Length: 297
Length: 194
Ligand code: SF4
Ligand code: SF4
Image 1: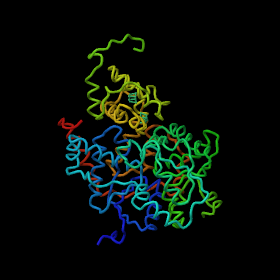
Image 2: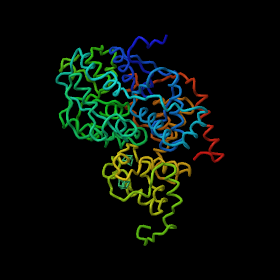
Image 3: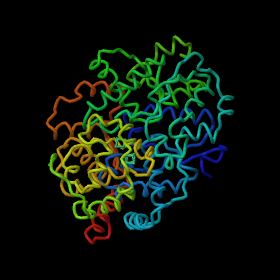
């Protein structure tokens, strides 16, 4: 009997490379929240890198083949595939989308991975699992410590909504799914201008100057809108907004001191998951003072 | 070239290159009517010498060499804003992928080397280890790009937070990953894949 059977909802899980390194608090808090909500999660054994942006940037076939092989590994684990990273999510879904539409590419990929591509395996971002599969009503019912008074700038970035036919998650110009989750757990989403702008993502290694400009605009916009903190659902966005925040402050001379949470950290906090199981101590911009001020810690 | 008088004909349009891009990207290049919506929303516009709509126009006019020689295609962040908003369903993000591939395959006349270096190291990591190890990636990148002090302050911060892994287990699938790479190379040699 699979260990997941005892749960009404259970998923296979593709964490992606970042969640095993610079974004380990996203992995830890995902497991913490799923455990608290009694949602099963089983990691795909020996999954490998989806190729992310660099692969599709220069070699579409390779990118499709890497994702297709990961999908077939995931096929061996029961349940829809839960993905935490917005970039992995986008690549895996893009692969299914392109190969469904294009027989020539599908045949090339099948030759490359020497097997069929599981186009039917449902790929879901955590956000979708929490808001739709588990459901906002049940989420509201699971809250033990509502995030009352916490003003949150929900940041979608690029790949959770674009291009709309790939993620199929929400409206591509005016999404509300993140804000709905935050309202369900008692937080206050703020209205702000940069929810869907790009953080500079992949340039963090090659051209950090790009990050300084784009991520600074996002931090400034959140601050100006009165947010206490930012919430993300992608390790690349997190790296640029959290890890590089001090550098951005030095470059621009503006102080933000803006904690950047993963969605699973905030939902976990509200649902009574111990802060120790949410990886809050791994955040570079410490949330301790803010959470204490709001009586959340 | 800038002030040269332009004559439009099927020859000057170099339809062959346009068709290549269209086949690779699965998107029409010819359908663009220059509304500029793509460039209006492009977050990387200020880093590019040719904004996205002009790249499409240059392709339509057969001036692809100017596109490949510039750095604009390497400064596209693949944010998908242009593809999402184009009224003519021109998939510019996919066109950018196709242009980078063509430039990459031709060993790139482009000026932008850092992005290409980062891409190459990223791919080598996949082939060798199966997963990305950020610390290794950053260290090798700094060494090869000669920027030994880049992000020096980030390292200790990340290590204290346990965010950089010093050791890693070998992925059980490296053999299979290697076969994927080599099968693709094989297909290309035989002309069975782009
Ligand atoms: S949005 Fe589309 S039609 Fe308009 S300029 Fe860009 S590619 Fe051309
Ligand atoms: S995908 Fe590239 S070209 Fe298109 S809007 Fe984003 S950065 Fe600009």
